[in-house]
Amino acid sequence: MSTTEHSEHSEYIDSETGKMGMWLFLFTEIFLFGGLFIVYSVMRAKYGEDFHHGALELNAFIGATNTVVLLVSSMTAAMSLTAIQKNQPKVAIALIFSTLLLAGVFMINKYFEYGHKFDLHLYPGSEVMRNLPKGEIMFFGLYFLMTGLHLFHVVVGGVLLTIVMLRVKSGKINSEHFLLLENGALYWHLVDLIWIFLFPLLYLIT
Image 1 (cartoon, helix red, strand yellow):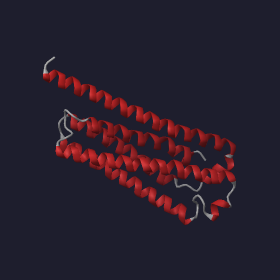
Image 2 (cartoon, rainbow, N blue to C red):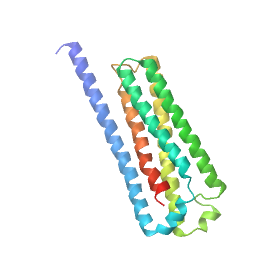
Image 3 (cartoon, rainbow, N blue to C red):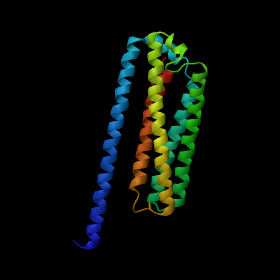
């Protein structure tokens, strides 16, 4: 095997290993949220009426808006990968930047949503929360846990995509070496997928 062939073979193995590592990581994240979804379902079955009252305090419009925002951002992330594969780095940068802007919109909406809950003193540990029925306490506890954990993943995804964008700009990610962008897009799709389950579970099933 020539030096060139050996180099290409090594890059192929590294690429496949990187993809496999990301998929394994994504599966662990799915198991994490899957466990929380199961806990939520069990508690909802046990405290149905209390969960119903708790869900009425959520803003379905903001939840729906954030769903659309994440769906579009997932599309722009996928399009950025296609752009870099077609050797269009400027287009890829613009699409990644669009994804980051949409992530910012999501976080701003979440800030106002959380702010409203704090204004009503509907947060774990508050005097109002302590006086609620047990089921409603459980609902809001799971609401903050699941949406907060998801928001953390949005922030991590935003940091990862920022790094990706800078590397595309520097030429380190290009039409021949784009594994980091591919993995970043996969991670962002996970963020979108989790929210697609969270939105109806928390906001729509009342």
